[in-house]
Structure formats: structure tokens, C-alpha cells
Length: 174
Image: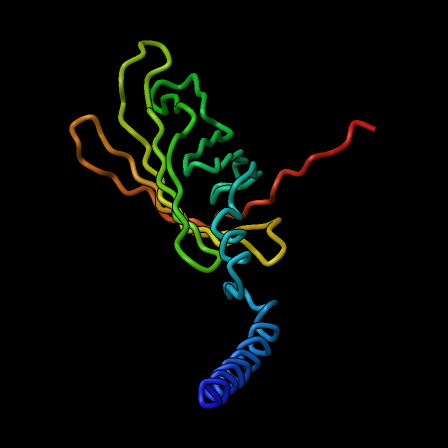
């Protein structure tokens, strides 16, 4: 019986000695970007993208993006509608997002391109983005890759740009 008590004491002391440095390291890492220090941090950062955001694409066009808790998203961009048939009209983008680890998220979204006068299908706009949310959770930025999938299935790469966002916050009516 006495041996069991001694072993229990040593196990508890060992656990405390191992836990103390880990706690100190977690405190030191708390403000480092992308470092998850607790289960709560992990949950919060896995969903940090959820909400509505105001962004700017690489051509200085405004965008509005909403990331839903179920991993879906929608996006509207300035210049979606054009009366120039060659440019076509772009529907709002619909897509999905995924947590990549730390404070990073991946997004894949599609929009339909069509002729405003005839309704003819002109292709799909495909956007892939890697985004990182800042420490406060109010800003995020990343890099996008934009492609057009032509009606025949071939892909035309349009470019890659920086995409900064600011979270849209609730403002009281008062």
C-alpha cells in the first residue's frame, strides 16, 4: 500500500514538472500568429473566417464576401454586370472554404459568365484563394488565383493577386 502511495506521488510530481514548462511556453506563444495554444484557440481559429468581409481585388475592385459556418461562401464583386457583350456578366460567386491550420483558410469559388443580351453561356470564373486572418480577427489577406473555364472545358489563367479584407462589424442604430 505504501509503495502505491509513493508511485502516485512521483506520477503527480512528474506530470506537474512536464506541464509547467508547456504552460509557460503557451503563454509566450499566445500572441504569435498562427500558434494554437489551447483547444479553445483551435476552435476559435478554425472558425475565424466566419462572417462578412469587405475586400479589394488586385484590380482595385470592391468585393463583399460572406463565409458561413458550414464551410460555404458567397461573393459579389464590383463590375459583375456589364452591358458590353464581350465582357459578359458574372453571377455572384458561390463556393466553399476550408480551415488549413493556424490562421489560414483555403477558398474555391465559381461564378457563371454569360452574355447579358442573349443569356448565352460564356464560361465559368474559378477563383482559388489562400487567406490568413490576423491576430485580432478583424483583417485578413491572401493571394488569389483566377481562371476562366471556357465552354469547351479549356482553362485560361487570368492571374494572381493580393486580396486584403476587413471584417464587417455590427454598428448600432443609435
